[in-house]
Image 1 (tube, one colour):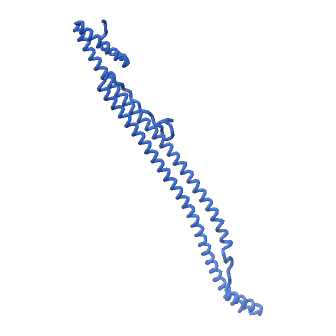
Image 2: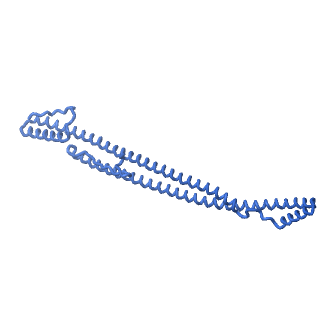
Image 3: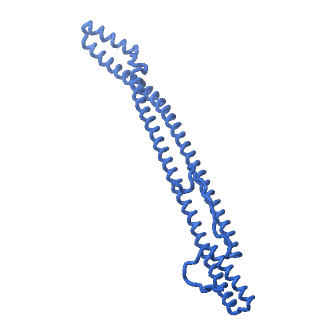
Length: 271
């Protein structure tokens, strides 16, 4: 039986061909042993051991390389999903803040217009709109007119100066009281507007917190999914490593790890 038993540096055949070749070489060794060709049997046995050791080492190296690539692929998929996750939630946060700023600006503009209109209304309608002169002032004016009619101009002038002084005082008091009343009404109006703006800000902050919580919850699911995939892959790899160590020639070396759907309904890292 003519066979080439040398172990060259050429590219090794596929796994099935190697297994067939080892089986054929083992059969050749047995045949040589039975037919008394011990030197050839020894040579076949030596080459057989060399081939097996070479194939075992090759398969171990191949398995380590394959499993390293699988771990790197899972890491890449996770990083890709995390990047997509952050981009999506950053966009949502920016849109939320843009909408919130629009609501605040709209309300602030409305408040400004309403405040101006309210001020005009208060200055126009707040009572008393004109001074209410005292009896003393009215009496002084009456005396002033009477003296003037009597041509007692000097006394009329003195009375007029006295009446003007009283009128100025009463006018100042009227104006001060009216301004104080308008100011109090204005403060009440502004307080009402502040409450309305405060309510809007509270709703905005509540929405911001809800979005922050939703982002954290979704991130926790992404991290848990990655942990589950990694744990499943490492478990499968350990099983295959054990099989390869026990059956280095015939044990399968493929690890299958499925890609779970991402938070957006697509596969992890899908674009």
